[in-house]
Image (tube, rainbow, N blue to C red; front, side, top):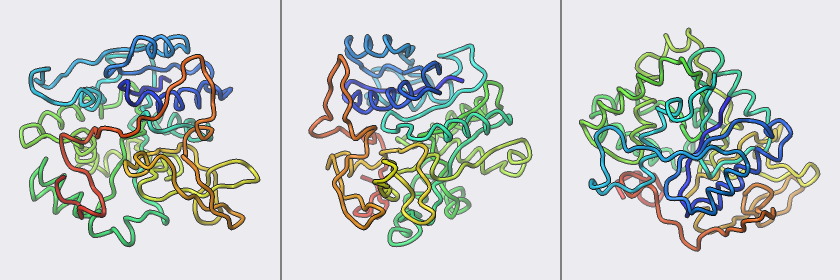
Length: 323
């Protein structure tokens, strides 16, 4: 299996934690890794190569060029369904966003096992702790409606408004999965209607849901939320006895992959996290809380530019409207 990711120089601080969370785990020490170069500095690429991460610069694809004015990170979004073409020679391909990291290797193993069944292993944004089930449910559904309306039209939006999002920040597919080519085809179709930051995620969601029963029979695996814990939906809790981030509710199972997907959290740098013994502590939710030393020290930028400048961003404040 190869685990692929992508990063610009700005996001390298997050990428370092992700790579170390894999390489410092005995089970990940020899795992094949690949990274799309979205503007990395030479010393950053050297750091990756020293840790046996293959660095590749993606092409635009789908008819885009440098002259179209799209943000460079959008290259990685368009390249995601073509990961095997950039990193050939592996049986299973897993993708992890640079702002995610591995806490419990069991999650990686579940993605590997799920993908080995022939279709795809992916985690829906469903959990009893997620805010989209409660106070922000209307804005969350509005966000889904906006994305589908923009990219596939109002009929698709109405059809899938109540479906969960299959989060493509973390997923795995076997090299021969039919999803790869169908995903690319859906993106090509979608680009005829519109273009935004969610085009690849919306396209694979649409493809899977349009043929869901057949995909499930063929081996599609939906993994539990702890395999891709998206922090914009719910902050985890901290088990001070085990030193692990856990689910907010009983039985407080350890999280497998922590996906620091909240733009708000990244801009604030830290947040108040409840502990299982009733305290509240300040944490940044990075790998080892960012307490690792390497021969290349990086810091989280004071203010991050948004990769979503090309499209929609769901927030409680905007109630799912275009930003």
